[in-house]
Length: 107
Length: 128
Image 1 (spheres, chains in turn yellow, cyan):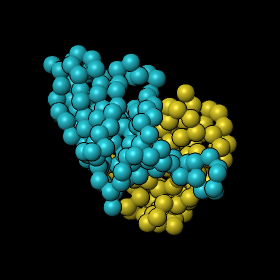
Image 2 (image 1 turned 180 degrees about the vertical axis):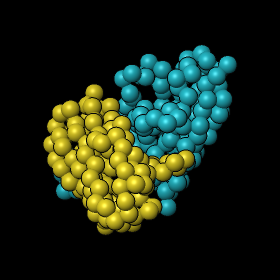
Image 3 (image 1 turned 90 degrees about the horizontal axis):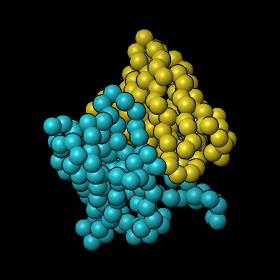
Image 4 (image 1 turned 90 degrees about the vertical axis):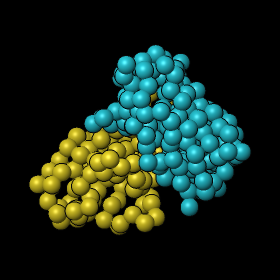
């Protein structure tokens, strides 16, 4: 199975900061990757699919990039509602696999 | 509007069989372009992909759980059922189902998949 390694596992940031989360695949996955935001006690929410396509209704401060094995989720200006845990998911082949998550906390 | 909701027991005993139902609306699970997936999350831990069933009845499973999982669909009821045999306390988790479209951005190109939206999840505790 393809392993997805996210970094960092957690970070502390302030409102207005630029935040970057990375996801590395153990092999090339083209751009078959999506990003999710999960708040405590809630179901994950899709942010980005196909590595860089913003889901409808998601604020433009979120962006995704990458192809092959290295991917990035960027929040250009962190807002209070963005404090959450973020996950990547590869759907290049089965079994689909998630990263271990990145928790974004308030500094 | 697409919605999904998980239902089933919240407490099961070790060695028993867990049966969870995902009832959905807003789409039909009748073509290869739509799937429903199951994902779980142990308390405080990461998401784990479990299984996927497509509208053409293609089924995929996590290799580590394949021997214990079965996923089926009932298109007349708009339901997908996940069965897990011989449960153990390590199977304690919130179980989510999610809609997964399969979309080609360019005609004829390999399609992309993702999960959107998700059900609210159901916390299942395995304990004697």
